[in-house]
Image (cartoon, rainbow, N blue to C red; front, side):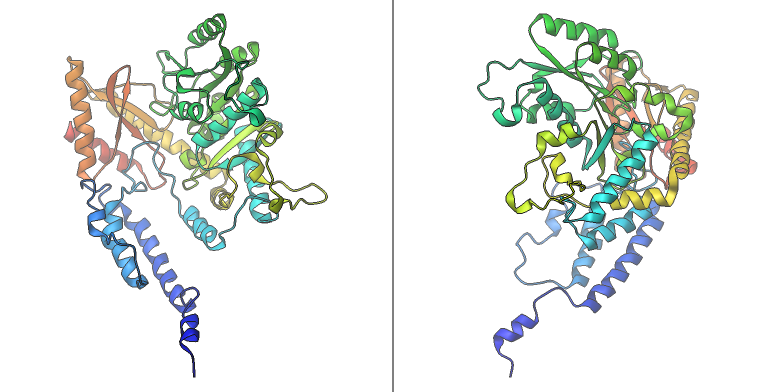
Length: 482
């Protein structure tokens, strides 16, 4: 006769294999249906904050719930409450790089659930990360002395790059810190007024201070003004500040503009400043031979970040940081407790935990490997080229309609445009209201931004599911809303 204890033990463990298999097959069909019919869904829910939470049990579950009921709640509550970034008419931010091969790879990653912190904890994860980083470096045309590491987002990549810049420009911040050290200078970082806010966030986290990130006025094409950079550096030197780094952007957030990296590199070399290139979005354009000019000055950088989840069709999240002589990054962050002293006697392994703050690391390399093998460089480049073509086509429609005007040059899959009005304030209100009307309709999704103090509409392309027909449909929606 079984005891009460043995009965309870028999119920422990994971769900039964047959139940798991049943739901796995159901989930596979659901995902395939979702991808195939996503264009039929409203893009974003037209609801108020708290609407989703109001439909959920707020008390933590005491007893288990059958998966059938959980999946029914996902279909009934969760899915209607998300913005469908993979919708072909979602043209906000930089589009969405969801791909079917990426989804398959993420499922495998979840099943393996390895921690890619050291080579011994994950030999395949570590060596695959090295491989895909080398592939990407070759595609980008970065010199061999650059090596990479994968993080989650460009914000984290940029912060790590600036940490190395700070360490090399000062006296042992790693061991002595910043607090109470009167001998250290006040460091300055220089960016354009179009650069990403992650630079300020990194400065805050590193103790350099938001105030010491100098945003310089951009030129007529929304690129960093090199003359303004020279003047700012000279002024800071006269006032006793220490120029630390310049962050040049290749594909700015609002307009996808490209800073004159080659000229910036000359100034950095003259003043021994660190040059970090934020190519989180625009770096992918380097895969197109006809756009190789975008790589001008890259070889002179100290560090370089690109987000394959923005243009290279790897599902979110995946950010690659490259550093010239990456040993500089490892020297700053390596810190191995006794329980992780598992070194290969030959010293041949790479332990990616040594190259940043994070110890536990996801197996992100697998999805990049699967996606890039599926499409190849030629296939990836062809798809990027199509998004650039669609952006230029959309820009031509803007030029032909007297109610609208382009607000910035169009180089990548981003178009900034604006409803015209003699009264700028009224035009701002109309542009903002138009975006709100479009987004609330559920049929299209755009963003707005500010350029030269004026509100403009912004369309971003990057989704494999988006065709010329979808772009034309969104243009009709915009014209009707206007």
